[in-house]
Length: 273
Image (cartoon, rainbow, N blue to C red; front, side, top):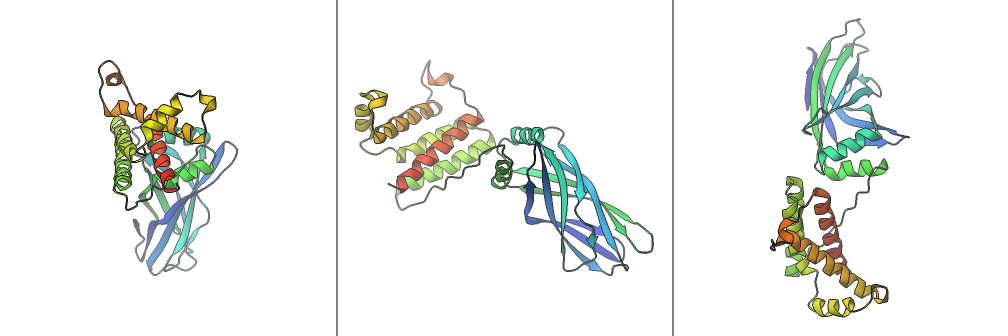
């Protein structure tokens, strides 16, 4: 929250619960930052406030300047509060660069603001401040999806009384944490451990029968069985260091996210069977 003291009164700026929204366009998009403005003290007659500033991305390991902020309308002297809308234009290139830089982490945005009191007496006192806030990965991913630059898919894995499935859900949460930490091999290893709950007791027998057939001759259940075994074998490369084979495997973030999404989907599918 930012505290702007103008002497006889003060303004307080704070991000709203859902701070951002985006209007998509052709190659460029209008990002709006929504702030709450509350006030204390006595305002001069006919007072209003203009806001100008810049939008920056925090903690991305490079220069994070995104653009200038434009105020949608002046802030009037009001209490308990009014909504302030600040807009910035983001291009397709900027959105793609942000996605690459944040690597699936929450996005921290920083506002550099200059607030000027447009007093009726002709004096224009000015205050500067910064507002920093975090946009959760899920919220930002939804914005990017709406702009046509991604597809954000959430798989809710149910927690049931089944001990193995509950353990698998815990392993997936651990895998998510490993992805955020950049430990992609550990994330895939956790996904591999979670798959133990996915494989039915008769899986190996069913896989042997399915693999004996040509791919085009397998029925739907047999094709699911083959997919499950292929994923299990692949992710095992992160869980085991076998000489001259899996010990040389390398993993990146895309691999880890794919392993996590596939395992979560397979585990969720169990709940519908």
